[in-house]
Image (tube, rainbow, N blue to C red; front, side, top):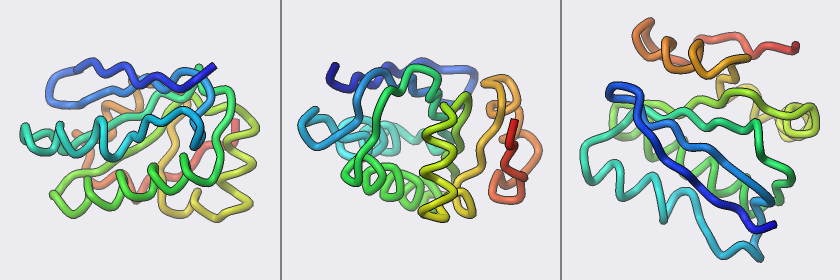
Length: 126
């Protein structure tokens, strides 16, 4: 199943539901297809809902890091919620868990933007 990025909004936070296999074959790119156009529209707070992500390869990770970097360069941030155990393991192995705040629920991820920089959040291991 190719990846699909479904964007919805909770206040001024863009919530992106990532559905399916996020890989080079999907020909969709979070950074190019979702983040850049939203930043052009002045959005800079992003939550990736990963509850329906089934697979991610290095191209998906690269797109995620580019998206995180661009959001922060525009005085915003990108955080994640509801990751699978495989995704958590991959983040730990690549040490990207040190860059990307991960919240157990979407509500907590959205609320993190009203509490200041998400980078100070502690990644949950539950």
